[in-house]
Structures are given as C-alpha cells and as structure tokens.
Length: 286
Image (cartoon, rainbow, N blue to C red):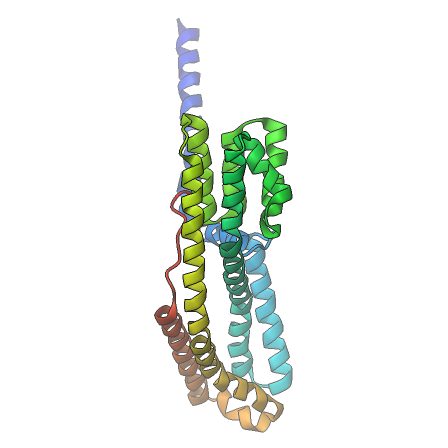
C-alpha cells in the first residue's frame, strides 16, 4: 500500500512538473511578438536568412558606425549622437522600402499565378500538381516559394501542412486567400474553384491598376515632403567639415535644440506618412 501511494505521489509530481514546463512558452510569447513581427516583415520584404534579432544587431552596428564617422568629421558628440540615432533606424527604413517594392511586384504577378491555377484546374490537374507546377511556370519572384512547396509535398505528401509552410514563405494576404481556397477545395470538393479563381484574378488586376495610379500621383508629394524633412540634417552634416560652427551644439542650449529639431522631424515625417498612406490589406488568414 505504501509503494502504491508513493507511486501516485510521484506521478502527481511528474504531472505538475510537466504542466509547469508547458506554461512557460505562453508566458514568454507576448515578449517575443514584437520580434516575430519584425521577422515576418523581413520575409514580406523578400530578405531571406535574416531574423529579427539579426536585424537588431545590424541596427546597432549601423548606429555605432554612423556616430563614429560623424564624430571624426565634426568633433561634436551631440551631432554624432543624432546621426547615430538616424543610423539605428536606417536599416528599418531600408527594409520598409524593400517591403513596399516587393509588395508592388507581387501585386503585378499575383493575377498571373491565379490564372495559371485556374487553367490547371480547368485542365483537370490535381491541386498539388497545379501548385507545384508554379515552380516552373509561375512568375520569377514567387518561384522559390513554390519550389519549396513542391519539395515539401514530395517528401511528406501532406497537402495541408505544405500549404501552411507556403503561406509562411509567401507572407502575403493574397497568398493566404489563394492557399485557403485551395485547401477548402481539396477538403470539401466542388466545381466552383475555377470560377472563384477567375473572379479573384479580375479583382486583383483592377486593384493593381487603381493602386498604381494612386501611387504615381502620390509619389511627387511624398518625395517632396521627405526632402523637406531631411534637408536641415543634410545642411548640418555639410557643416560638419567646419568644427568651429558646431561647437555651439555641445552646449546645453544646442543639445536641447538638436533634441527638439529631431522630435519635430520625426513627428512631421510620421504625420506625412500617415496622411499619405494608402490602405494596405492585412493578413487575416495567416
């Protein structure tokens, strides 16, 4: 009887320990959401092999390099610190630019992908074969993702799991909708998939044409506003060749002026981007 009670006690302690071990990731997950969003942003920008932590390391390195270069040129610690802050956010701005460019490229090629899928479905091809064929016949920017899908499906044969990995690789709201449509057609069947894909292709072409017109009209205004925000700091950088003109910025009043100028520049830039921002489709089917 004593051995039986001891066994029950041991099993209870084991279950408590195992239950506590599984609860830890749930507690730490909110602290990693910010980094997960950065990693997903990198995937959406087409930057492969770089994680959110690595991007943070690059930001720190860029900040230190920019601060040292400006410090050597100007001999002003305050001015060097300002450009160090700019250097810290420069990689993020570059990722945002790459993300915007890749989003425009995908907007142009997604109708072709949907048309290829609709043609394959109409020709009687199986869905996994139709998706795998896009690794050869699909648009160039999306071929690597579909090549990985084809390799995963050949290795596992699990269509649903391979679609999940494809959605993660594409990291695009249109890709999410296409993958979920294929999953639904695979699970429940039906004859409306071809009609759905053709309707989606028409909608994507109209959306791409409208957004391209809006972005063309918006481009001159946005570039002019960016130049207006950057011009004072460009002048300050040009003055760095004459250190005597920057001595005032190492005084308390000069440092306050730099801080206020930086705050006004950031506020004006964010306000400009918010006013001129076009609606962006979010991933609701991730």
